[in-house]
Image (cartoon, rainbow, N blue to C red; front, side):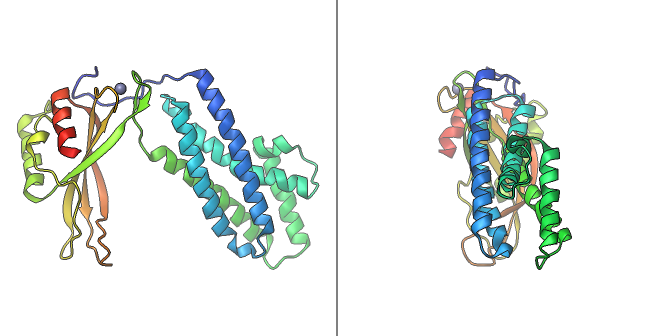
Length: 286
Ligand SMILES: [Zn+2]
């Protein structure tokens, strides 16, 4: 059991065999998605609409990255964060490896995918070719588009890496998530009780508060909201963690029952709580 009051830290452990297997599988799928991107861009008759294809392919990239990172079960954050960057880069570079084949540039196929220098040479050759055929847009615009493309894929990797996932190493399973909100007087009570309990509060006071599971839209004025999130292992129910962040709830100006939360400010991130507190909260949040 982790000591209540301490915060989650990835253990750094990973299974090398599992990591290699799923990373290689991820690379193969990334090459496939890159090929799909190349084909779709080639058959699309309106070049200016390529950004729609880019959006769709980025969505595919996000699904692939989230799936592979999940399967790798790697508790080393540096390696875990590097996997989506590698996969997204390969999706981007693969299209160049196929262009290289299509235009007979003569560079090595895998070099085009894995060696950034070769990829750059292919891009240069392509840009020169575009210039040669004097298409309606110039070389400069081409380079801007190629860079924007790479940036879009790397943003996907960043997004995948920013979503926090906790993992129970005893059960080899990912944590589940449940959340509820504190509003108005209960929000004040939260701060008061936290202050009273002092440094070692361990969030023992949380079960006393009245939570709102689903927010209702507001129309008059924005208001502060406190979101309490529980992360628990569905198998052993041990080592439950709590995260608390303050937000502002926006007015539902479009009248579509939106309860958008903005201005996130984390108060606590992934703190272990005692089993009694956890059980009481899970019952409240369920
Ligand atoms: Zn567990």
